[in-house]
Length: 121
Image (cartoon, rainbow, N blue to C red; front, side, top):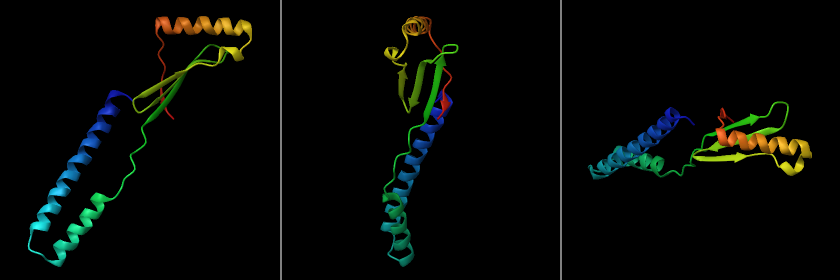
């Protein structure tokens, strides 16, 4: 998730909180009014919507990989919400000459810094 998307996500969450607070105040105001069927039912309907259980939206998920030419992925990345998971294939599952090449390439990528393009999954 880039900074702009995160800011939009945060702004949306803040807006929902703001609207819920306004709805609570409106319900309180309707309950304080002279009792009538219209205000009673309107307050109940609004209260039911406000009290309805909601499931949190799933965290945005992005994935990407850095590959060695004509070989297995070197580094695989997955970003879920604010959690970044980095993985690399198990060197024990590779032939010896691939294992040494993989280890050297991984070390070089981490030392010099690797940039992975993450795409929505």
